[in-house]
Amino acid sequence: MQIRFQQSGGFSGMRKTSIVDTQALPAREAKKVQRLVESAGFFDLPEHFPRPKSGADYFTYSITVEDGDRSHSVEVSEPSAPQSLRPLIRYLASLKRS
Image 1 (cartoon, rainbow, N blue to C red):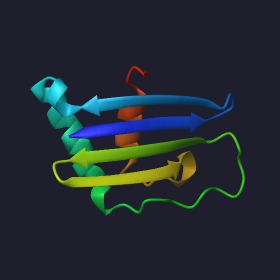
Image 2 (image 1 turned 60 degrees about the vertical axis):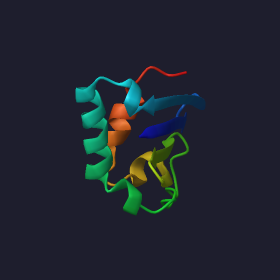
Image 3 (image 1 turned 90 degrees about the horizontal axis):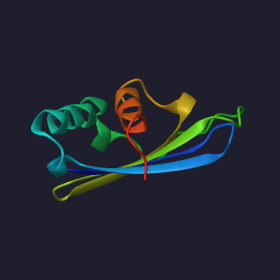
């Protein structure tokens, strides 16, 4: 499984990107990532969530997950993220960026 994650916006308008390849992770960490994706119901989420009507300083997250022959992308702003997706976002946001 490969995950491309981009966090943009916020007060400074920053943009950070990271890529997670579960094949390059220790087995325990790879399983954690897979559980987060599954718990989020990621492949069933819509591609876009409605943007908030106010609050220009929110972060926007773009996440693409490729798993075998499946690929799905989601773009969501901070306040619009469903509860099920937030643990995956927190995990990905905590990683070292490229």
